[in-house]
Image (tube, rainbow, N blue to C red; front, side, top):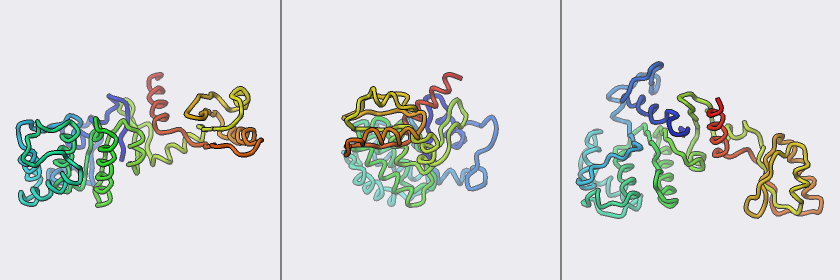
Length: 270
C-alpha cells in the first residue's frame, strides 16, 4: 500500500503509531485482527525517513547487529548480507565503514538492515529519497520481490510514478484525514478520462471552440487538452481525423501526480 500526502499530512505519524512509538488519540492499530505485540514487532521491518546508520561501524557489524535483534543467527545473516549487497550492487565490502559509503549506497545498506531477517510486515518511509533512476528501479524490483514472497508492505513516497507502479492499494492523507483510498487505476478512473494528448494538424483555436475543452497546453510534439466533459473527446477525434491518419490520440484519466496536486490544492482552499 502506497501512503501519500504533502509534508505534514500524517504519513510518518501513522507509521509511528503502528510501531507504538506514539499513542493514537483515538482508534487502535491491529494486525491480522489483533493488537500489536512485541512478538509481532519482531517480524516487522522499518526503514525510517531519517536514516539511522552508525557511521564509524562496519557495514557487517551493523547489519548483523540489527539482524540478531530480530532473532536471526549471525552466520545466516553474514551470508544473507553478501547476497543482498550483490543484488543491490552496493559499491563496497562488508568490512568497510559506513562513513565511507556514498549516500545512495548507505541507503541500500539501510534497506538491507530492514529486510535481511525476512520480515512479514515492512514499513518503508520514503525509501527512494535521493536515489538516481537506476538505483530507484533496482530498489523497486527488490520491494516487489519481497511482496511476491508474501510480505505486507506500506510505503510512503512523493514519486507518484513509483507509487503507481508499486501499489496494489493507495491511501492519500490530508491534514490527518483519508481523502482517497483504493487501487491506483480505480482512483484515476474515478476522475474521468479528462486528459487528452493529441498530435494532429488542427489549430488550437479550433480545438478551443469545442464545448468541454477547458484548456490546451503544449506537450512534446503535441498538445495536452484538459476536458471538463470526457465526451468532448469524441468531437476532438472526429475533427482531428477529418483528413485521415494522425500520429497520436490518447484520452486518459489524470495522472496520480495531477490528482495529488488537485487534492492538495483543495485542502488549502478549505
